Length: 215
Image (tube, rainbow, N blue to C red):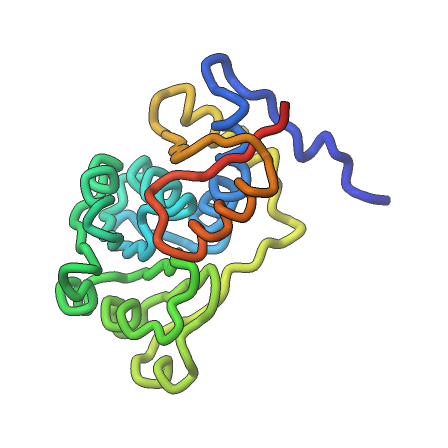
């Protein structure tokens, strides 16, 4: 018997727009599951978030900050002010300096929330020996992983993760003012805008989701 759709439904609170709700779902649920199910984070841990200005990155920082965790983050310089306001302990602009050198061996956990780290040298450099490295896309190459002892894994959604549990938590945090949703642009769902949005995602877009709407 299939899972009831009721288990994937949550009522959006007053004050939250449909655009915000749509922007929150995938990114917020992913961040929640990484922090509350995949990882076991100790209060004394330091967590590094790569790709900190993206949808998952901003969600991760806010949820970690709520738990009182020390957070390091990297993103482009243009997004530094926004990321810092989310509660990071320290920030590195990857287009102006080397985050790997700045945060070398400082993180117990590294969460790579970039679109694909390709080689992943930076995150491994930041991770402490015997640390934990989580990639939301591709893991660093085996050759690189063999250079530093640690536990490396991809995040993969699992059927035992409850969407309703995650949504309830996120919506409660939103109502209490502890969780922001960033929308960069809201555009009509035309073919032209769809193509443009994909082009932006493939590059280095501004922080926030691009939302295409009908009607």
